Image 1 (cartoon, helix red, strand yellow):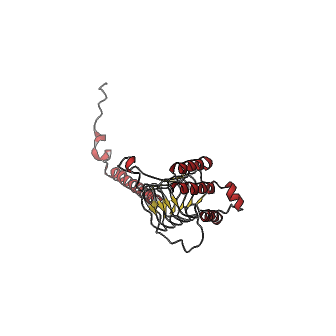
Image 2: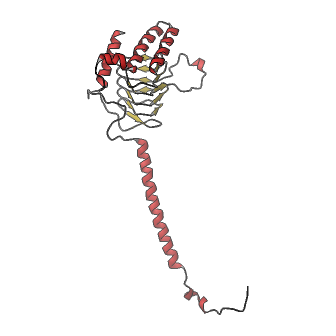
Image 3: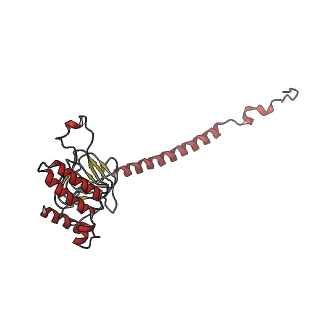
Length: 253
């Protein structure tokens, strides 16, 4: 357990430019406090001391605002930045060096069977090594987020994500091709790239707006042409001879 705690502290130094000292980590980082209490609760859980495990996790939630079920399996190097509102469900599996930002939910979905039939089932997601999940993201169900993938802020993901991919939107869609980040050797924060990102939903909306503009312009051209044609084909009064007919002024209304 001490080795896990050392890696959790090292992860904060590696990924948070705001940290100044180890004492600051121990005193001022709720994500570290939550991970520490989880390690103790999980130690009790795997020894079938379920009530003690749940009680410790309850204390961790009360102190940090982060809820980690003691039955979850979490590798070394976990970094929960800011942390408030993070929920990690019972059957969640997190690999090494996973980063979660505030308000992230690793939750389950509602299958057809009753709750009593789900006790021994995998209900929550698996995050492989190096995954980054942006703030407010929801990852739901027994899916797999591949190694070094990124989930953008406020995304809702309910399908498997390949390794190295970036997922954004509701529902989550892969933005561009998967890339390898393992060789870069640097931490890319926040789950969403800082540069240009090919959001598939935004791209579709932009395409629809372009089509609407083209159709609007086309309709305007057709209306103009139709008005001109009606003006050219409308008979003039001199051509009908109506102006030569006598007007009866003796009739009264």
